Image 1: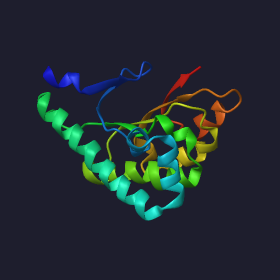
Image 2 (image 1 turned 45 degrees about the horizontal axis):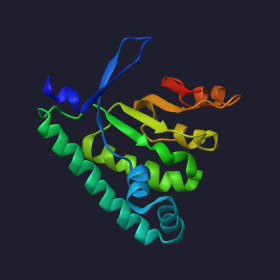
Image 3 (image 1 turned 30 degrees about the horizontal axis):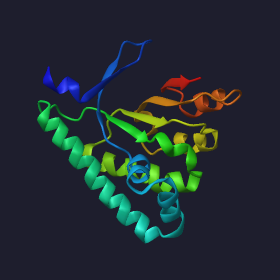
Image 4 (image 1 turned 135 degrees about the horizontal axis):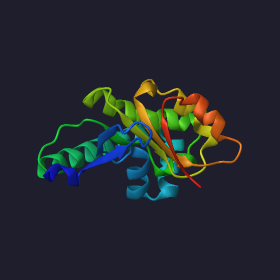
Length: 169
């Protein structure tokens, strides 16, 4: 089907369940790409008004692009969302992640509903595990992709007990 080119199928090898995820570029990633890492982090840490204005613009860009691609690829409905968090999540403190990572993600939930989601952080993120486990829609996080940290994965499993963990070694 034409919409398969944009909806990323993510499957659970243990249950056989497959979720069709529409990709939304996260604020954490999009802001970093648009501004550069140093400028982006300085803006987030130093000017909340500017940071929230930038988040509004990134939300508009991310959802606009996702909607354009959905229509261009056959108009499939949004059945799941990826990528909550973002590649650069590991750079954020728990407080900043709650404000800007989780805050952006919850805006997606407000717009599209409490759907299955993929939560992602490329780098070592043990300092964010409790924050990941505190998502208001935690039970909708069906897949978590992150870096494996020796001695820490048991804690992540405890915080996301029903989530398929895809661990990068």
